[in-house]
Amino acid sequence: MSWDRKQLESDRTTKLVRQSADEDLKSLSLDFLKKSYQFDYCYQWNWAGFPILNMPEDIVAYQEILFRCKPTVVIETGVAWGGSIALAASIMSLYEPTGQVLGIDKNLDEALLFQLRDLNLSVRIDLLQSNSTEESALDWVAERLTESDKVMVVLDSHHTHDHVLSELRVFSSFVTSGQFLIVGDTIVKDLANDTDRVRPWSHKQNPHSALEEFLSESSDFVRDDQVNRKLLTSFHPGGYLRKV
Image (spheres, rainbow, N blue to C red):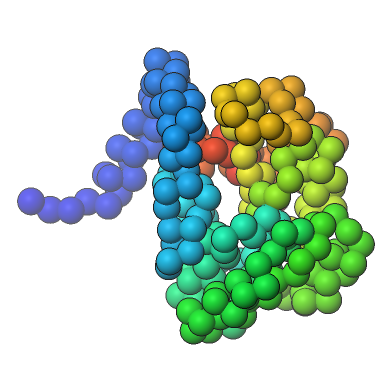
């Protein structure tokens, strides 16, 4: 038996087209998302010992994007327990040891930065406790960037329409050509009422509605089909954007 990488990629492309057109499969996937959400399935996973509040498919997609685009700086809003920060820093350390990961969160555990740095990765990790759209937070980010940086942004903080739209408008300016802007939890439009927790977002006002408004305003970003079309159980459907 011989291993033919070109044939593998060709088969992948053909089946992806069929997969993305299969409405029954999409319906089954959404049913799984809704049912698993009742048990907080997305809360069950760790990266390097840090809880990462994401679906497994999104975790895999994230590392694929990092290797594909090789950003030198990753900016994340919404740090929580640090799993996504740990993921970005550990993957980046394999291709850009002098890179940096910047995290912003209004509710930040003071010990988390030290715990993340205890991973002993070469990539620098910095965290800021702040509302992500505060001018001081944007200045903090800008001070850490250089003209040669390749910058990727992940937005996963407060999920109201207005907040996400504000984040999109300001953080999109940091993203460099060819890099990703990931809008987290666009699945809220389908899951907003499927929880006992009271949240200030809904089926109509959420990250997805903010994303649609942002795309109507900006011609600098496109949805990346290579990622969006293959994800079946993503919490960020349609939320993987690439700067043209």
